[in-house]
Length: 74
Image 1 (cartoon, rainbow, N blue to C red):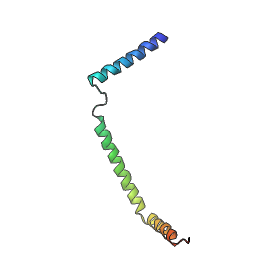
Image 2: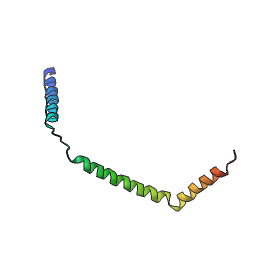
Image 3: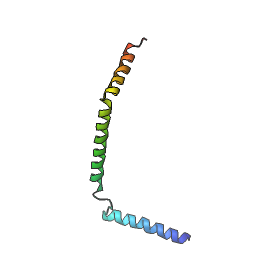
Image 4: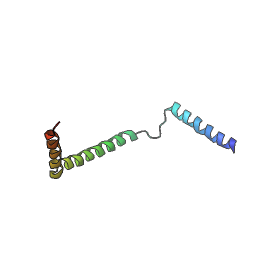
């Protein structure tokens, strides 16, 4: 069993080295789509966060926190 595992491991490592030498990549072309999806998700999150922060209840609460902080005695 040890020899079979070692042979399989050697085949995997040698195959990876051969692929690297030839410049073959299995995920070629995926990077651009991943960046695009990340940007879309970030923009969607920013829009939701902006809507929440600029809503009436949250805005009033933030103003109250700032007012209490400025009125505090030291």
